[in-house]
Amino acid sequence: MRVKSRQKIILEMAQGASLLTVEEVAEQLHVSRETIRRDFVSLDAQGLLRRVHGGARPAVNATSEEPFHTRQTKNVDAKTIIAQAAARLVQPGETVMIDTGSTTLAFALAIPADIELTVITNSLRIADILSRTSVRRDIYVLGGEFRPETQQILGTFCLDQIDRFRADHAIIGVGAISRSGDLMDYDPQEAQLARAMIVRSHKTTVLADHSKFDSYALIGLCAFGDINRIVTDTPPAEEFCSMARRLNVELIVAAQD
Image (cartoon, rainbow, N blue to C red; front, side, top):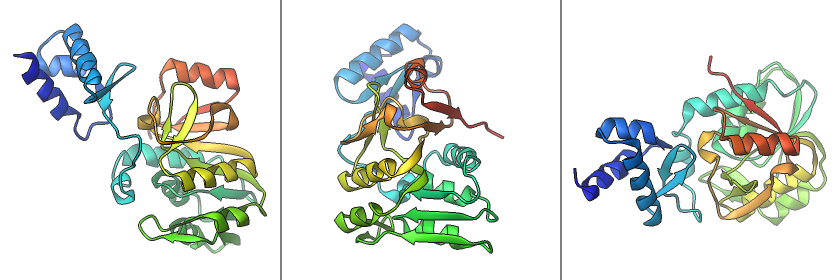
């Protein structure tokens, strides 16, 4: 098989995949792993794939994010087990800040209905989900600029209001976690809100599935050491595990039931 034909097949395989491993591509195309590694290097240089530890990912435009409804349909199983593991970390009576995202939405669905909480959020969907309970829950929805597609509130009014609150726990999502230890997002206003939640909370838990590691987004949100915990679905590369140990960030890998 010619190089261009093989690389075209690799790009087709990458469509809709979060990660292509060297082993699986070599096996499917009946070539050596070294051949596939060279193909990955070539496609990375062309900006068509992005090489990562153990394989390659589809090239992502770091300046924009997929629509919210599309993100809700991706990595659903991973987000579900992350949400379930994170929900077990919340203690009755806590005050919790939750930002808007597909994984934080799954987190809200995973919180048991019999836990009393105070919730501060900019998400109308999350507020609605957490209000469906017979126990007492004080739910504060931040006001400001409304974005219909994500059903969230953002802007300076939102930031002014969050400055008045203090919370036990912030639960946030991120767009990317880079090898240098930067947590990143695609939207400047969403990043501002998440930073404000981190500053005003005693501890911060980040919910990030495997696709968020070793990737980049437009806006820096915070440094790795600014958070207390990451909940993910599969063990990340050793460099992230080492970083977590060095910075005393708890890394929880959710178990598949």
